[in-house]
Every structure is written in structure tokens, then in C-alpha cells.
Length: 180
Image (cartoon, rainbow, N blue to C red; front, top):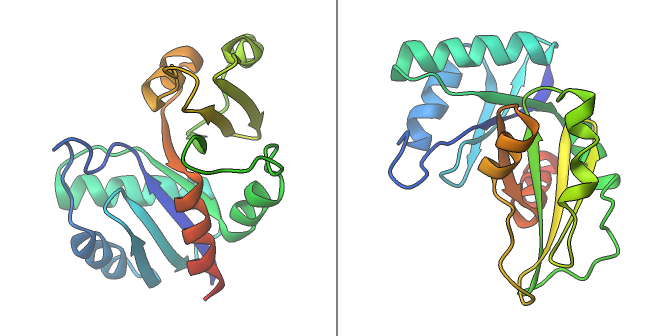
């Protein structure tokens, strides 16, 4: 068994794709996943699986959600090692996060075309700094300077791939859950 994190896109956002976490746990457990845990209502599921390939897990989970909930929900899969790596390789690790300085990671469902990746430096401003590592787009936002353009929708539109985002506090909370 290997530990994974499933990140569901656009779940429980503004009354859209409402799914109770208890229902998600039941769906995952009925599919044979073990040690299923969820974190907050935004579609973060930690589980153990004998299936080792993230792309097979993604397909299986998306089909499970379609069968059980009747909705197509894009799912991004990260292994525990991937999660540790995205924390260890944080390009903004020196930033002092707080009320006015926030860090987000947008998880891309697939690798964008190279010409779109090449556009990422043009997103940078005095308000926002972006950095792509693998399929993880880090965004550091200074909230006290002005209005940021960053959103998951912005990233999806610019990079032309499905994505889902989590703030750094959520990333760290999931990390804590992985360690326990």
C-alpha cells in the first residue's frame, strides 16, 4: 500500500458541486481504499491504495465520482513523496507568510504546452510572483499592495489545462495528516 492525496477540482465552491466529505469517505472506502481521511470541505482526500500509478488512480476515482455522484470531477493525484517534495522545493520558503503575504499552489492536471509555460514569467508583478515546479504552480501574493489577478480560473485560462488550488496552510495541514 502507498499513501496518496486526491485533490478534487471545484468541489463545494460557491454552492457548486456540493459533496459531503462523509460521502466521499464512503465512496473511497467502498472502492477498496484504506485509511481514508478528508480535510475541510474542499475535496482533499488522503488514502492508501494498492494501485501505485497516479494516472490509474485518477481514472478510477473520476469514474467512481461519476458513478456515485453523477458528476465529472477532475481529480489530481499526488503521492506522499510528491507532497513532501512540493514542500521541500518551495521556491518561496524564505517568505514570511502572514495576513498580507499568502502562498498558494495550483496543481495542474497535466503539463501545459511549452509555449504556455514560457508565458509564466509574464504573470509576475509587484503583487504576485509565480514559479512552476513539475505540475505545481506556486504563487506568492502580497495582499496589501493591490488587487491580485491570481485565481485558479486565471491559471486554467492562461495555461489551458484543468487545475485546482490550495493555500499554504492547507498544504501544511495535509502534510501533518500524512505524518500521523
